[in-house]
Length: 237
Image (tube, rainbow, N blue to C red; front, side):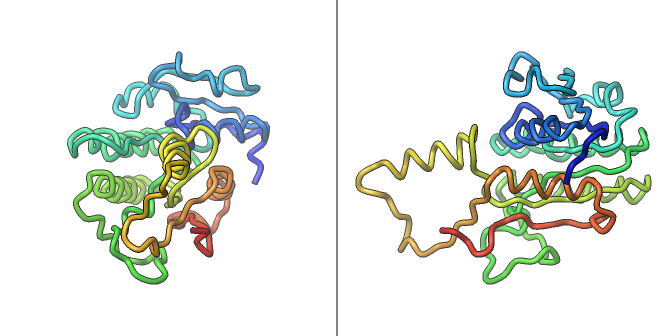
């Protein structure tokens, strides 16, 4: 869905998914503020029509308060998947809280929050739908992303903030180091390494497909207050 003419703010804009989103928004004619902790690392999105790279950090509420007012839509993509619980909580949970509060105070029309299917945990059997209870287990990433959803909902309910949540599975595509380059590297090794019997399912989804759904969630009225799993059906591997 095109967001032509919309004013948009994107966190995590220099990352894999955030960068793909910014490029799509620019191509569609949106006016984008792309948040970057280090603008020197924003070459992938630099020079795009309608894109302004702004310096800031989701852990710094003042930087969000400077840049979010005046935009119609916020895409919260920023997150970290590595490090201890304290480090991930600061970015994934408190960062989400900061973004949600800034969006609410600025009167933003919609906040699209990027979560993960990992909030359900790793031991599910059969079809996992959006109403499946979240049992993230002990991994800091799973736990903090589940807590981030709760923080967002709390602020949204208190401040009448319209939001939508997307829960992607394994995202692959250009610029993806972990789920793309690393796995291609493993595939090239001889002999090929299998864990267990090699019968487990994997749910890789192409980055542009994730961006497609994100842009729909930014404006669709039925998406307000809802969460959506984003994974291929059937699993390709």
